[in-house]
Image (cartoon, rainbow, N blue to C red; front, side):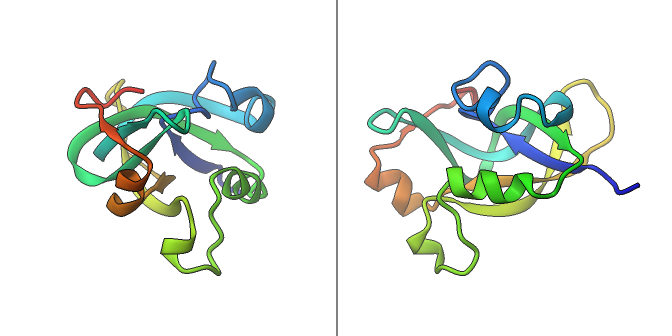
Length: 132
């Protein structure tokens, strides 16, 4: 048996959000609320958020999957291809430390980030409370 794969989501992939059922619904083994450190921006012209590295809290969910192929599906949704230069992607996928809101142990999870330039190009509006 292999260890579960963890992904931190803060936007349309959250439970109940627009892309959850299609991409995650029946594939999620477990999920819980958590935060990472960064800055979260609403992208009103796009209809989804973007996060960058920073010192604020970004809230979302850590979702566990037992099938690693989920990353290929999520990469396609997030317009991320590791073979391209970062500026050619909408997002980059990186491993981050997540902090569960229930006080359980920290978990290393994949998360998708934008560059500050991309946030600016898309008219990003800072969400200081870290929720989208």
